Image (cartoon, rainbow, N blue to C red; front, side):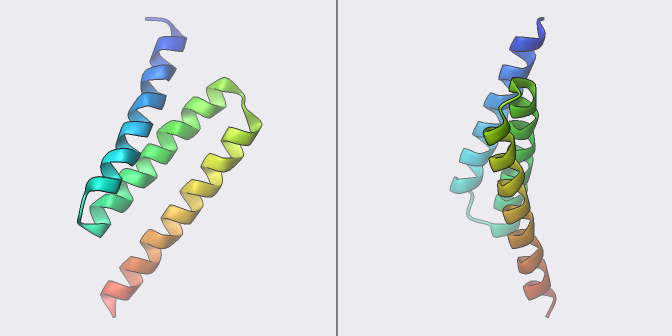
Length: 77
């Protein structure tokens, strides 16, 4: 299997994970889907060498991770 197909599958899986994360009701699970989906899309964007896409994915992962962290802190209080 060529690298292009593998990375397209990784990118598609990332998009699917983010979409499923939007549907899931439980917040913590939704955040996991969003983070891992973002990471898979980041891998795909690095393969494409698309600077704007890479930067957007890094920002997306940071924002979702921060939101996940805030939610964990809120639940522990």
